[in-house]
Image (cartoon, rainbow, N blue to C red; front, side, top):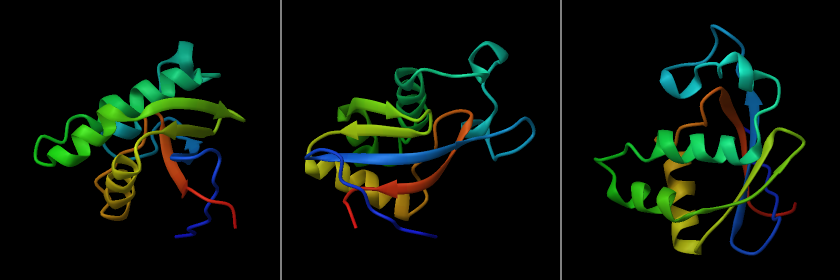
Length: 118
């Protein structure tokens, strides 16, 4: 897995996403979006989906708290989700990504997890 890093703003992370086609992906976290959202979901819709699928970690309270605490920062090129939060929360998300417990927004896969310029 390529771990390219990209810092956008202080205490922020970028998730580089790829949209999942029909029949691809795994589990309900990667199901295709309904037809009205398939063309171009808004960044906030993608962020809301990210928070929804990752707020179900009842066995991992720190991850649930971190996901609920991060904020929507932006959406670039219809594939890069920018989130912002306290460094402690971002570290919990990084750990969740490393342990593969962090799920992608519905209809997407996470291609890269970025947090500083190379």
